[in-house]
Image (tube, rainbow, N blue to C red; front, side):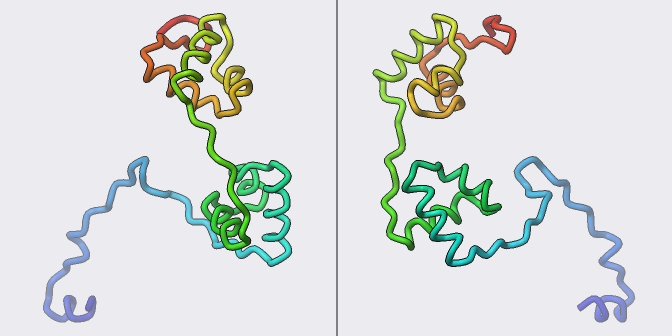
Length: 135
């Protein structure tokens, strides 16, 4: 195709603009990591013992969805995700107003700190900055 454009005397390539890379565009290309059958068995066993999907993904150098697929294929039943029910949000709000951080609350509720932060924000709670001042 490029040869045909050159033969026609046109230089289409010089008119091509570079594509800006935004925050949603991956800038790093990772190789596919193939897990051995032994590694998949280890992942399944570690998950059954309580390891989390994200933890296993980091440990084995794969994406969390890869871990999910291997667990599904191995017939491992997934643990239910802990949701921020209205009762849990109320409890989190009380703990937050007592001065606990979102990460301390998360440990008590069995969820991630970002889950607590988002739930409190959605509930209209004024959030503190890292120095403890309200935003």
